Length: 597
Image (cartoon, rainbow, N blue to C red; front, side):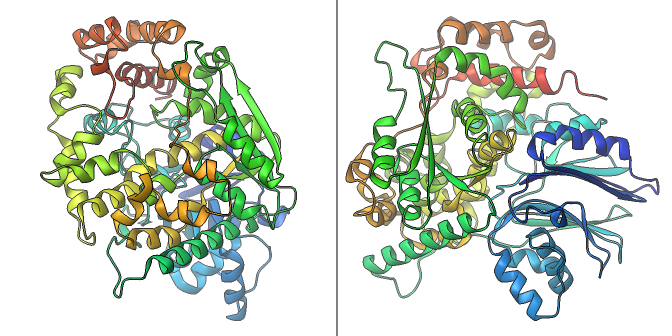
């Protein structure tokens, strides 16, 4: 895991090395083990390395291929790099390192830009080919590794975080009204290529972008997910056997592609517990980590899941670590967490991830986590609710997922930022894409290829990497996702959702974990809008910066502040509408108001 950045000029000037240095400095927390820069004429690269594979200096970056002259900066991990390396060696390629970065260079030399189709992993990379003076940018299939872009006609810059681009200077920081509509409708999801700022874009997952010095470019998808039934249909026993095999293969590859110890974030839920069960028999001294929070003292909500995580840790004899966080620490941590957010994130568990990552990062450099299982195998409560609905696909989706209607958005946002219902148009188009057999196939495909990219995938890169901790998610292994997408939604939704995972867990992990109600990462101090938390939101929304920005209609803000816990002031999936407004304002004050011009 690393941080990458760079600049390509289109105007015959040399790349701005000072700007690249500023971007690299902003990425320093992502890679404390080595800092490197490389430049030649119109191009410059910066790199911050977190050493996970091949800890030697031979895998430092930027890395140049002596045979072709190509140079690469790479963030991520290729889980199949050993297999690819063996194939390339057999074809006559020569290697100077033992890591996965050089595999990208040699794969590109052998197969060109199509090499990305051969890569299994999470990655974002930039590769300069001096033979035709072109820059190739690429991002993995599920957007697990970020790649932000800023272009002004004279040059293009890229970086692993949006704040790093801002540190380079010269970014148009005006609000993108369409992104604003997505942000407040899809609980902070702004699908690529947009971001909340007009001057910053994101490379779409499963795409490559080839740029040349004259500014010409070619954007190409290299993968898409099909959600259709195979013929002949496997039996239930065959589905479960394939699930077990695909999951074990994914877990094995995620653990073995590392030259450092790898632990597991153990929440006490089915997904992380299953990861522990699959690893415990062949990983010596497996380390597990659980976090919990102080309750509010009024039985409002259980604030930890130690009952279940302790059960799993005891069953498998892991080296288990528990961290309990008082509410005062949660509120004190909010400013630092928001300063680390590469984009605005509404989910309460961003603070949990920040605290957890800081704590775990002191012990290991890489961990596995269960994120993605609910989206891939249908674990959320809104999926059966959508399934039971009637009407057009967009209506069925919106009734159970949209945070607010377009009419409410118009009442909330100042008229100068008003746009048509852009989110409904985006969702309708995404659901209508061919290659999905049923409505719920459409929904699950949209979730796993688009929505999940910005929530939760974005935060499980962003917050852990701020503490130089690499977080790996086996449930987003390509082969496993493709297998799950080929199953019928009804099969996945059995027994309250995630039936295939529950079935393969029987006899492996305790039944109490399999049969428990689904839990959500509880952070009561942020979920319930009262006390110091409410006071901080009031300060933000009443501040001169917020009023001068003029994003919100004051009558709407006043209504939320007057009754923050009124039922109508929570979204369909139980998010605080007041927190949404305050969080965006807070993020803008931290990241944009003082950004260099």
